[in-house]
Image 1 (cartoon, rainbow, N blue to C red):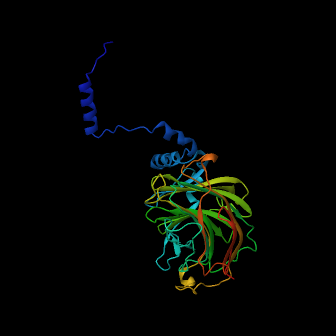
Image 2 (image 1 turned 180 degrees about the vertical axis):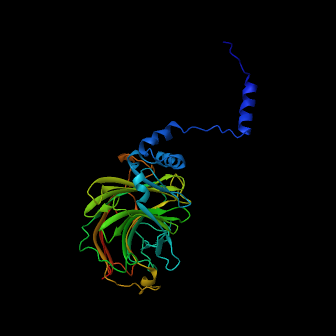
Length: 359
């Protein structure tokens, strides 16, 4: 059989003609991305699979078990089929700045919207809590001071047995809601909240993230965490303009799980430059109930007791080894009109036990 040889010029012309006729030469995923298939259900194909390959490749291997990703347009992607109904997205309602509403009309109270502190002007030793915080509900917070280029924060959070430690207030989910979370502010002041939201009806804790007036919360009992346990959690910048929160603990049914939420956010650099990390314990309240002046907070009977935030570490590496983690330098406190009256805490910034009493 006679073999025909084609010149390089002919082959280039052939590619040009095929392309001009609409024949696409598909670029194959890299080996690194194809390795992510081990973490994605086979039924997830097409664009969703391609997106999740990219997202998972930016996560630490131990964080790829159960992942939900929300892109900048609010579209949700998952790596496990059962996660498609695990979470709910809530958006600003327009009726109350602290109330968010789902597409189905379910309402929740969002965590306090707090401005980025000017960490260049304060230190842990000289920080004085502001007296001007209104319309948020009571809270304790701790945040990093100094420009350390942190991209990673971790903590252990102990959630006490909730029977007797919380009081259901309001109608449905429109009243007071306890939150405990990490997160931070980007260089431009863009804030992200990422941690746990209390569910009154099931006495469980849901992983959530809030950014730019939109909150995604785990609403399926299949992925909620039980109370009366210590949960390890971490928050890190997984890619440019993308952050991740991860929690490992016992689910509602007693089975151990690692749950991960990934969000696209604007203005968060991958190197962590000028990022402020935070931890907050709060009872969120609708703005209309809190009021607009220093005496406007409405004492309605809700309280939290014995929530502990400890083992806090930070790193300039998003998947650090134990030797790459350091204790952070913090400023800590509550708005002065709430200190000792409504919010009390003991211990240090790296090991604080907080109680909020609105009775």
